[in-house]
Length: 254
Image (tube, rainbow, N blue to C red; front, top):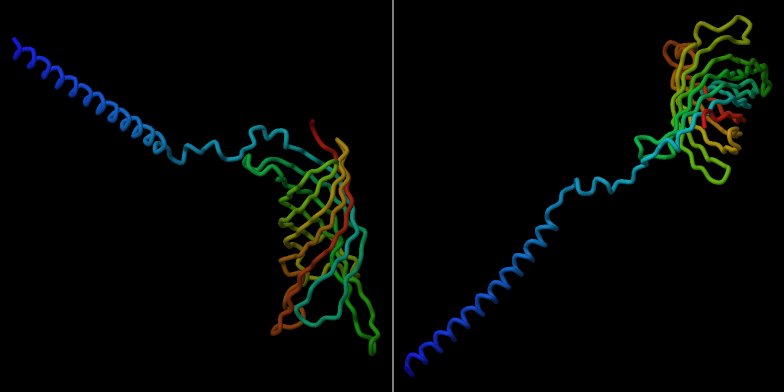
């Protein structure tokens, strides 16, 4: 009987030890599994997880503005010559036009973007200097009336009741007439294009805005035939104009 009791106590002790060991191993396994699971959670992502992190303008309609207006300006026009030709610029107030501006969010990511186009009437050309005697010149204006169409990419920064504007883009022109006695010379290129830049300040009084701007135009097309003076030594000419303008614009819609 004594032997049977000792055997039972020994078996109970062994069973209790094994159960405690299994319980501890189970906790370690569970902890390990939990840790592995947490690590896997942090590993389970790709670039799409940050798709919503990009700054986007959800309601771009509040940034949309349609403006139509008129501008008039005072211009300084000239033509650059690759050869040594005596000439100078001339000044003219006969520059005006009507314009349309559309401000909007470019692809819902650039809130200060806009485009501007219109139709302008400008006087372009130069004053040719003919030397009559030493240091004495006779001046002949070579003035042309043209119609121009600009297409500008315009960026803006609004603050208070003001707006800073910067624009850049191409323009095209067509010469309509001239003040030259014999009319437009055959060597003059009536159709041309160029690049222009502008900058200015707007005073905003909804729905009216007043714009003060400065712009510079440089024609990429030759103003006259390069062979005008010589078949061998070509002369390259490009018209240019500096313009200071004042405009009144009206906001369409709300």
